[in-house]
Structures are given as C-alpha cells and as structure tokens.
Length: 426
Image (cartoon, rainbow, N blue to C red; front, side, top):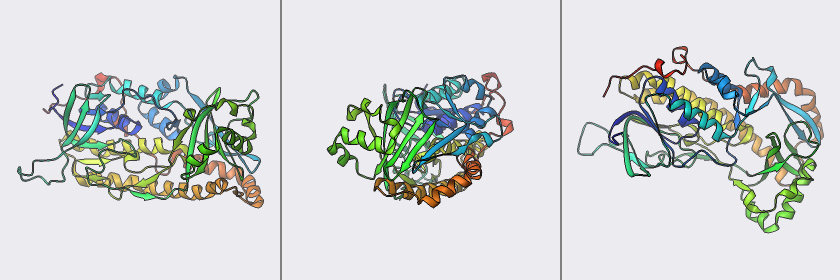
C-alpha cells in the first residue's frame, strides 16, 4: 500500500478499543488502519475479563458462539471472603440469557480472535511493530484549515518512517497515549491510594469455590480462577513496592498467607521478584476528548481502575458508540466535531459514574493496607443479609454497565466479507 494513501480512519493502538473500532468501521465498508507498537498481543496481567455486555455485542455481530468455542473460562457467580465471612456478591445468572455469565480469556486470545475477523474485511489494515510518533497537521501556510486540525499520524515501522492520512484519527493507545499531548489534551488525575502486585499461583490441591478475593484487616488478595491457576493480586499502599522488596519475598509470602490462608501451601512458588508485576493503579479522564479530525477513546480518554475489571468493557463500549455515531459521516468523507462531541458527552457520563464508584471502593480497600478492619462486624452482617438483593444490583452494574452500547441492526449483517459494502471514493 502507498503510505500516502488516504484512509477514512487511522487508529493508534490495537487493544480492545482499537481493534473493535477498526472492525466495526471496516464492516461498514470504510478504509481503516490500526497501528500497534508491539509485535504481538502477548502481555502478562492485562484485563482478561469479558463481561456479559461484551458477549451481547459479539452476539449482535454474529461472533459470540465462535468466540466461546475458544478455550475460555465461564463464571456465573463471584464470591468474596470479607473479614472471614464468605458471601456471593455477584450473580450474573440473574441477567437475561444467553449472556448471563462472565468470561475469563487471555486478552491476547481475544485480540487475536478479533484481529483475524477484521483482516477478512477488504478495508482493514493492521500494522504490527509500528509505533506512532506524532500527528499530521495542515501546513500553516495552506490557509483555510485550523492549525489544531489533525490530518493523520506519523509512525515508525519495520520499513522505517511512514504516514497515514485520514479523515479521522483515533487515539486508542492506552493510559500512556503517545497522541494526547500532541493533540493538546491533558488528563485530570484522580488520586488513587493503592497499587496492585500481580502474579500467578497454582491452585491449592483442594481449592475452595471460585473466589474473587479475600478482604480483611490482614490485607486484600485477589484470586481470579484461571482453571489450574489463580491470577492473583495483592493490594498495597500507593508507592509501597520498594519497601516490600526491601523486606524480602519471605515477608511477602507471609503477608499473602495472613490475608488469604488458602494460599499457604502454594505461596512458596513465588521465588523471584521477576514473577511479580507492579500495576500502578491510575484513574484520570480528559476534560475534552477530541479536536477537529481527532478523538481519544478507552484508557487514552479515561484510565479506569482495575476494580471490577470493567476497563476493557468500557473501552469497547466507547468504540461501539464512536462507530455508530461517525460511520455515516465518514462515508461522506467528513468527521464533524459536533459528532465527536456527542460521543464524548454520551460516554463520559457512565465513565464518571463508574470512576466515582471505584474511588469510593479504593478508600475502603486502602484500610486493609494499613492493618485496619475494612468494615465493622455490623456492616458485614448487613451485607450478608442484603446479599440476595445486592448481587442482582452488582450483576447489572458490573456485568452490563451503566450505559451499555449496542450494534445497530443495520450494522449487524454477518461477518461474510461479501456482505461488506465497497466504497467508491479515492
């Protein structure tokens, strides 16, 4: 392909938001390029939860059963042990079928699946090992076009420098987006008092029911069931990692065992700090997501906490909302700023609400990092009594979301490339 060929949309970042957006636009007959700086999708401890709302979207696209044929784990209920008392806090089984469960799947499997489906479409281009380096703006001497207008992007790939000009440029390249600053967009940070240490542990010989986590004055440990292993996490105070390393692995293993005694027989598998990944928990959002010819979505627009595992699904919801809103305009060769503003207004509402819920949860969880009881005994008893009602509410908020998006019926016509309309524009 000629590197100067104009595209309808160019997307930085082949994470869930970028690949889903590229796929949806290419299904509509548009010409899309997605650029990813890594050579593959293999990364440890990324968001691996596919929530019921995303399963619904896959169903609307005719991809649900094909995706579920992959080796994935299905969870209908999520237990937690709070101050020593086990309770079911989420029951996806109360949701309308068939999407009444959560799927755990390595994110690279999910992205490979979507990318393979997208590459069947004639207008889709995926460039791996290609790092975005900047934006294209109009020549200041050309006149008639505002200097802040974005006309595409620059990148560096295996063959050297390249450009992709496009009607719309999208930053879907995560919380460390390379395009926000060049676009003149600066996120507002939301203070977070915790970080997470991620690691993998084998399941005990006689494991308990699937348990999301253990929370008490001894700490908080996550134990996400991955079949024969746990994707595990230890919540620590913000900036405490160096102190933990200085204390040594034996002290870390003892801390894990105090917080989650069920792990006592498997923590000895942690023998090297290289097995442990620090996730610096961050929450922020852009006051403005867009410029003429440009918009940020997903973590590039609003970094979410890992709490409830909703980040991937909110990013996908952004992509669906943007594709729905902008496709008719891109088919005419334009990307109106008013349309981009409406996308931000729609998606910013559920983001603000969820980040508010997460912030309150952080303050509660942070007590465990200080050796304090997280909840008084009366509150734990009240939660247990209210659990039947609570688990229905949490299933909706976590599994479906606060403003779920749907694929318009006219866009959900099957995945056969023969059904994809061809564009006649040059």
